[in-house]
Every structure is written in C-alpha cells, then in structure tokens.
Image 1: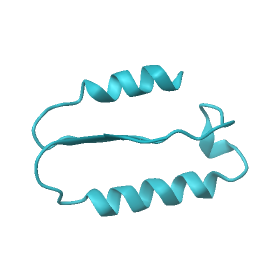
Image 2 (image 1 turned 135 degrees about the vertical axis):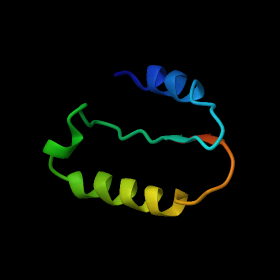
Image 3 (image 1 turned 90 degrees about the vertical axis):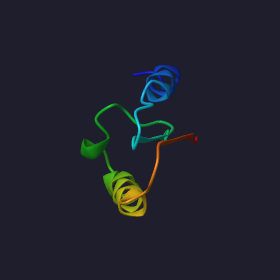
Image 4 (image 1 turned 90 degrees about the horizontal axis):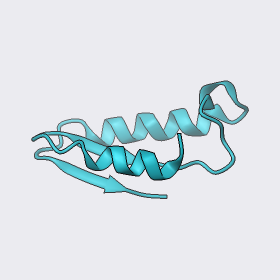
Amino acid sequence: MPPSIQRSNAKHYKAEGTITKVKEYARRSHLMPAQAGWEEVADYALDWALGSAGAAGATSTLSR
C-alpha cells in the first residue's frame, strides 16, 4: 500500500498503550520478506519490538 496510506492508518491507532511506527523502505515491494535483503527488515522489526516491549502509555511515531 502507498506510504501515505500507511501513515494515515498509523494515526488511527490511538488506544491507550498502543505503540505505532511506520518505517518506509524505498524500492521494496509489499512482500518484503520474500525479497533479497529481508534480513534488514526483520532485524529492524525485532529491534523495534524489543525496544518497545514494556513501553508505558500510548505513543505514535512516524519515520522515513
């Protein structure tokens, strides 16, 4: 889906305790895990999840 729609969707996740983050990867298809270099995406997701575990309160961040 286009990045603009992803950013818009992320803004709708505002429930208490909800943490959202949009990370854009240029020149990658929707099926990132099947592309060469999938490890970069997996490493980022794991690092984000571990870093966000136990975070208090609702936060929303967008990055490119």
